[in-house]
Every structure is written in structure tokens, then in C-alpha cells.
Length: 147
Image (cartoon, rainbow, N blue to C red; front, side, top):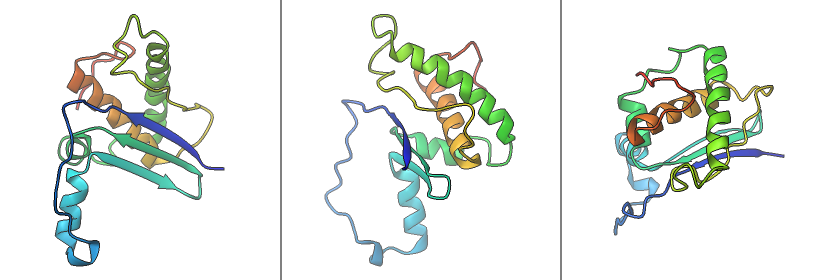
């Protein structure tokens, strides 16, 4: 059974209103790469591990490619320990909509510390937390996000 981790932040003011979308057969490789960077959705799927993370956030993919530290910069152990702390704080904020903005903390993140999600999932999740904190001026678990 595939478990899915969703992180969704939908803004009322941001919509993708393209009228023309060429088919994949008409795009060359550079156009495909550009389309991936401009997409508002990041999906990481690993059928072998049966875990998936879907991040729907305007601007995150561009930030990930252009600003975030490259893959391999952090160890998987470091990413897992930080993600565990961030997820606990995130889920506590989801449960307190009267105290924290419910438009920012919409959904609980199903992340368990004892499960090996793989490097890619941990890398994208960690960088989403950094992006989120920098973009919305939020601090999760007392860490000052650094790039």
C-alpha cells in the first residue's frame, strides 16, 4: 500500500491560467526542464519504498532549483532528524487553528521517524520547511532557517 505525504498550500490569489499547453511530443528536452521548474507541484515517488511526497506550493520548485543547497549537501541522518522536529511542530500547529493561521497549516503531515523514506523524500521535505519558514516568516521549532 502506498503512503502519501501531502503538503498543500493553495493561495486564493494564485492561479495558473495558461490557455495553450503543447503536448509532450512537441516539447524538446529544454522546454520540459523549464516546464518542471515553473510547475507549482513537486512530486517525489519511489515505488520501491512505497512512499510519495506531493508539494503544491507556488514558487517552491523554482526556489528548490535555484536557491536550496544541492542534493548531497546534507546527510540523510541530518535531514531525518530535522524533518522529525519540523513535522512534530507542524502537526501541533495544525491542531491549533485558533492560535496559528489555519490557511498556512492546513493538513497534518504523516511522517514517522522510524521509517526510511529515502534521501529524495527527506531532502524535498526539509527544503520545503526551509522555504515555508523564509516565505511566510514563520519559525518552526526555534531553528532559524538558513540556506
